[in-house]
View 1 (cartoon, helix red, strand yellow):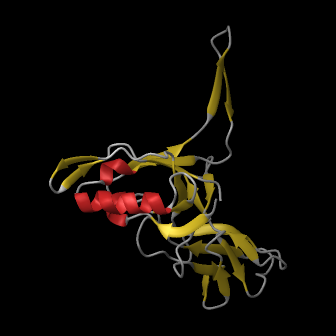
View 2 (cartoon, rainbow, N blue to C red):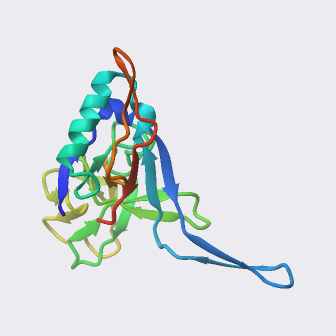
View 3 (cartoon, rainbow, N blue to C red):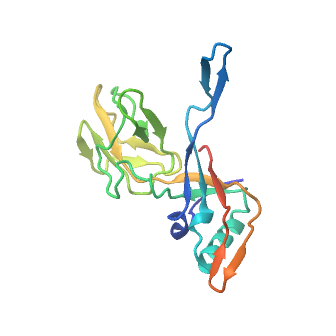
Length: 207
């Protein structure tokens, strides 16, 4: 079992369906009131790549990718067409997302993305940033060349510790680490140059 830093075919991914999943336990009491418990601190994304298969060439690309990953065995990168940027565009800005506050000692900060308003936001850890896409700022001033970003963990490390109270922010593009959730592809050739594979489920893996 290994992680392959290879992205699923983009042409197929653009037509896929999917999104975040939560695990919530709900118990209804005799009074009609509910007790709710969120089992996961972080959401887990699921996708169905079958919707993106339009041609025979698409299916051949998916088949080759599936075989190289050995079905469910190896994980890989997935580009979520709706959500792969710190600001929703293809041009990240260094002030897009808050990473933390300097204490004069720490130099490493996890990339993350905020969802929702300030009332009760969800902070999603970003562990698979796109290489060379990250931009970092300290107190609104972009850091040029004075940091590195680990594309395997999403940890940004600055060459010098930000001063106490300084706001550390970043912008970036990112992928989702996933694996196939099946060990069998059920392929149908619907015509000479078309193929149907309606069920190719993928599931996010914890990095």
